[in-house]
Length: 146
Image 1 (tube, rainbow, N blue to C red):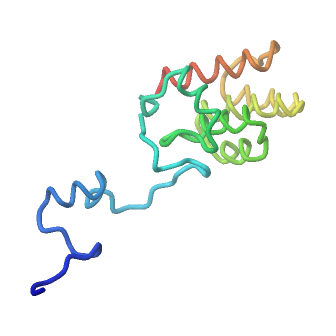
Image 2: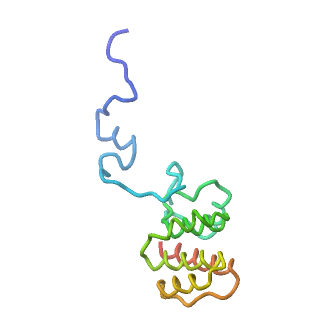
Image 3: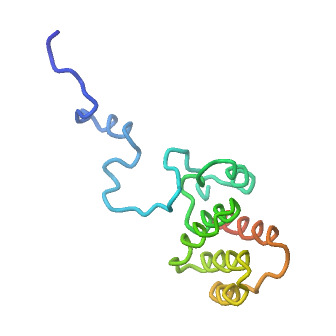
């Protein structure tokens, strides 16, 4: 057999071959921060294609949907019962959305003083009702905004 054998590390011969490799190949040359536990092998959808129902259904998976931003990923982990992971995702975030999620997480923990601080940072009235109702409201707002 003559000629060069093709290997998986050969450079593509055309722009089309490059784009078939990965949609971001050649475009993204900087560092991107991905929330811990986010699976990059799943389709990203409108928060990347997510609606309330598909986000709820994703709770049966082991990791949040691909492309989920830290506040929404924190809500996902909180609903799964992993308070520490949820808290780590929002504790260094500076957005009002992250502050709202941070407040919710401290409310789940039962630390109402800390929760009230974060509600102020988020410019939201402190929630007093059912935790599940607040989770639903925050998820819906973040997905509608996305």
